[in-house]
Image 1 (cartoon, each protein chain N blue to C red):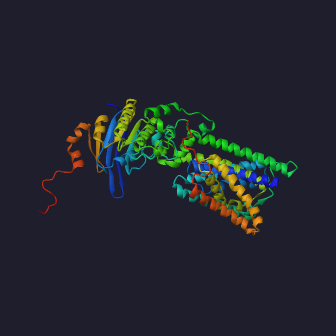
Image 2: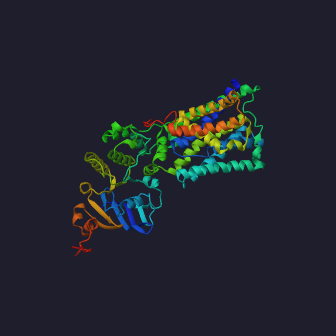
Image 3: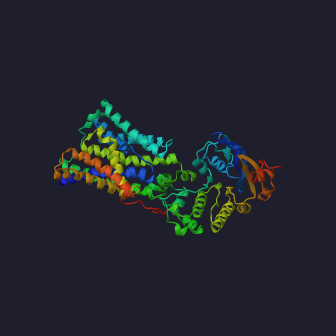
Length: 296
Length: 255
């Protein structure tokens, strides 16, 4: 049971990093990214490709960073010519294109079978202590991300993000370079997303294209919307709430004697229902954004 | 004769078949206050949009202190010192009045400044809030204050940007007279501090009070360039606003 709790906590913390990253883009800067999972995928495939080429995890991390910087810059570049809603659709399609590439470039990515056997990062002899150390590392990465993002959004830079979100024309009139802002936010948000993917790959020891379905992006969206767009604490709490609900689904299945298809279907119901419920009844989320919090 | 700070030559802009700016030349001297007048739809706002890069001109040149800015995006033009306000100031609903003023001054607002935790100068913002009597609403959402206060805030924010030329689109339209005095005083102070002002305005009292030079647009053409007191005597201005004198009625009215 404690191993299961550790598993849920590790996955929740990894997703919380993804939620913080999406929240920085969508909640603060108004960049409605529907391809968030692609940034995560850069991290997972960085780790997997380094492993399949017999390179160490450090090389995998570096490869993940290179990939994510390229994808983030591509996202930001698209934003120059597209309105916010069209940009969202473009990011969704880029995410799908990257997943399709991962599925079909069998020689490089192992195709739909993915790449398995990626070693755990911390080999201490006993699997449990290795997983405990990994959880501590994930937790440290989550806290560092939270702290850094808080710094960003509590500063004048954070004000320029919110101006970009609310009144881009006013931001331009104040002299803010909107393309440059978009580029910086995408880069800042992409790094923890890739780090999350890298740690995820070494935790699960398997990387495959099924982890990059667009529905995973909407899992992250649900976390951010439930927690509260524009609130770091909200994003983290949203991730914990959604992952805990997911963890309870198998127990509910057993308790009510439901068929096993129920688990996968129930996950989708929770995401869809959670999104719609919160958008209709509590659009500000569990922890609403604070207005006027930046005083200099 | 002071040097020319803003120089527009042969500006042309049309929307479809409708010619909105027709070979407009305008040179603004450093330190002056120029009123830009004209009936509704004469092209005043379009001229401001073209000068500040928010609209691309179909032809002509704009230069700021001698260097061409015609092809630059609005944010770059603002950074070079040519700043504008909008006719209907739209203010963010999820930022406070204080946050908008803080954001208006870009100094030390970069990603790196944020990461190293460099503190920002808030004393000036607090002073400004006091001066403008916006201190009581400083922590309110900027979209929730009155229309007049929004105009005041948008002008103060533009000035916080330290412009060399400030283009104002109807700074006092729909503003309560007591706030209007604030705005006039603020603009006079800014001008005394060296900011050149180009003001689109309909209120003649305001124009006479502030401007020593007026240019008048009508149907995209510059039809007058004179001190405000001469405007009422200027035949083309009178015609633009009141219509042409005709010898007999164009339409016969049946008895």
